[in-house]
Length: 288
Image (cartoon, rainbow, N blue to C red; front, side):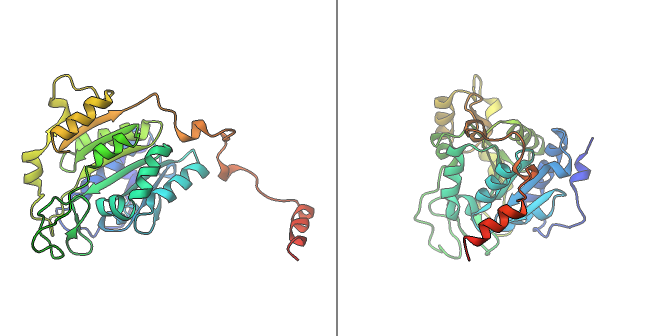
């Protein structure tokens, strides 16, 4: 049985010391081992930005895509090889700006992929500009007098778009984050896990201390039921999105794979797609 060490490689991350992404990487590795995966059973598909580097730091199949496009690739990988556990990853700029269209449609499509977003409320790799998660008034190099755009409430958006699994965590809570990733992997359908992952270099507002002072843990709310969609939305709104834990899960919604008529249990990559020579020659003549 694999341990989290089997998901390590010899590539040292070049994130800034203290970056929340270190914990996200560790949580993915621990969760993969805890659910019984081997490195060859896992594919990590990442986007662009500091968080996009994560696919190269985990001993598994990996694909570093282009900005905002981790989800199309991840869905293609899952459809081609349904035996793989597929994790897509990226940052809030990657997934909720240029990639937002893909995020919404992945949610409604419900392919069995786990999407982990490292949310630092800023563009870190390009040295500190506002992201779709930056609050109004947020001052950066590109908004020296403060942002005049409102922040996206991604948890509300995900639930209203029909997501079957919505969770949020904080990178300093490795235990909770690992457990949520395990639950996301085991959920049959699309799973969105947003992780507050502070940028220690460029975001001096949404710091570790700030999150600790403002986060409400859902397991501290008496009577909270993650299967209650209305309660989930109301709780997120009442706490300005600053909640952690399993926000909402619908175990009854069938996955995309379950709904595709005739979708083979044998992965496409294991099918024999070779052609007989006569068949190939016949096709070739049509283009000559």
